[in-house]
Length: 307
Image 1 (cartoon, rainbow, N blue to C red):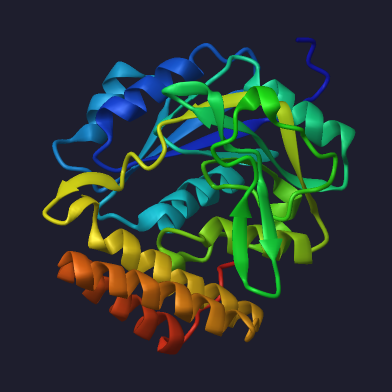
Image 2: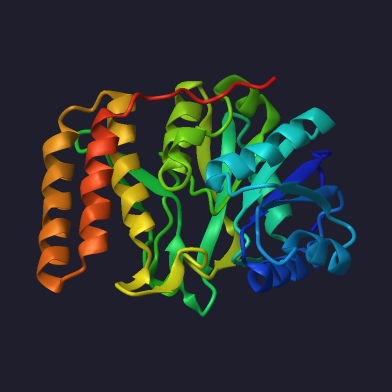
């Protein structure tokens, strides 16, 4: 690929007890053919000194070690602040449980260069263990229900028809942002911790006047939920996953003032609670109930601006 962009890119990875996934991701990034990027690895309070181990194996990275787990939002914000302070023109968030094609970054920058109204682009994301199937081709937002929909979810790549329309939101799994969009819209909202922070951020960036696009020729592969898929007494997903999902869904519709979304999501989560009650999964039942309570009544906080 011939590179016409002079963009400097900070690629931010957050690691939290995900050594093997992060190693595979960093190995794939070594094959990226775009010349001007730096990897900022934010270790989110991992056990067993994972940050120093990764720095030793990949000396080219810049390592930032957090003393505790700040979540997806907080961990990435640490990296974003550093990148902005260092003067990078673009910031790319990348999940540590991904692997990338060598030309993915160049294709994303090319998409931005051709669409100057965009502030964000995301790549086409396929499943790591089934590369014929789509994990995400971007996001659609249903305002009346306050519902975020993943485009292309689980669809065969061979059958998928890409739309030329702008996206409503980009997934935090991999999104490339311009410095200008970041400065105008602000950072991730750390109150969300994890889940829906990318949707809220995307909608805020669009409100600030920037478009969001899909770079369909840029391809990466995703393990899908590696950090949340831990063995648990009530299944693979931890009760905390359900808590944050439920709480943050209500944070989002409250923040946007979408009152019509409350009955829809209350019904959804009541059905979840009924299912967990019947299956005897009482920790998950309590997590959903707590998520509803906190999501509806905790005071909302705004995202931080930089600097």
